[in-house]
Image (cartoon, helix red, strand yellow):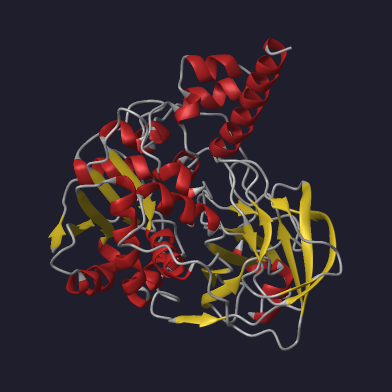
Length: 450
């Protein structure tokens, strides 16, 4: 069933979408890189624990590193090859973390060996959650939160609504759009697993109005025995944030510091849902994902199925990136991160790569003092006061930011920076401030436990 939803969340912004160059391009298989670089820390939680040795030959889909506790997931081989070395690898944060270097065999094929299937008919909710963890599945929308943890319904809570997030409001990116058009069967199978795992009574696939073809396509394929509706919402950023989507679809507001389950909802990205439907019936682990590669600095724009661990430098060579690259974003330009090292690799949470040449980036504009115009307040989707928070960040008033102005509720959507006439990089201030607050809290906890 297809419903048009006129309700939406408060505030938000409308940045240029820039999706037209890739939203009609089908997903294509990306070539295997001669070298695969796999960080063990590519999800929220404990890094994966390596179980292979240097010099060992591995086959595509083989388990390379196991989950290191409940808040962790394993890593599987994206290609067949030989473990060249186990050493530190660079990641987007600028740090080095433990990882695996795989030298790809020239004859490495696409086939992946079958594992132990997770049967929809006989598996318990706990077995499905364990199967999702064993497959190494994390949120593919960018957060990379372990999916089995998100799906575990806390004691005393009930999941009435399972929301499949097909919004993809980030400019330039069309990954989820193409997944909905090309992997609908996997999405619907994934929904069946998710219903059984969560006990959800109703499923809503939320899609923005600029993807009407995906909404129509999925609506036609929903079987009569699935309690699923497709709801199309007005285009507005950052509607893809799960709290905003819940407000748009359900008219409910997740409380400050709360989670979707506090309003009886669970939100799962549509590409994550497709991976659940693709992998669990075969007992396989995730080896690759769909990524949008676009931007004015790229010649061969498109949506590509790329092995996890493919070096960014190799990706840019293959798609014909401009020689005068100025900025490269992992993710979109609003919530993505500008990379400082082209030797980092694709990870499970990489939803897009957006490339700009020197001619495409305006010269850095001067940052002026806040004029207290209120534009950032009007834009903030969770009704914070970015102006006040920015002033406090400049004066290092971190405790006040957290305790009185709810900084930790900020999910760094960048709407405030987008509208600021003084060019103040507010979201960067908040990101740094939150990092300092988390570090302080961790230090306090460590001292208390001594």
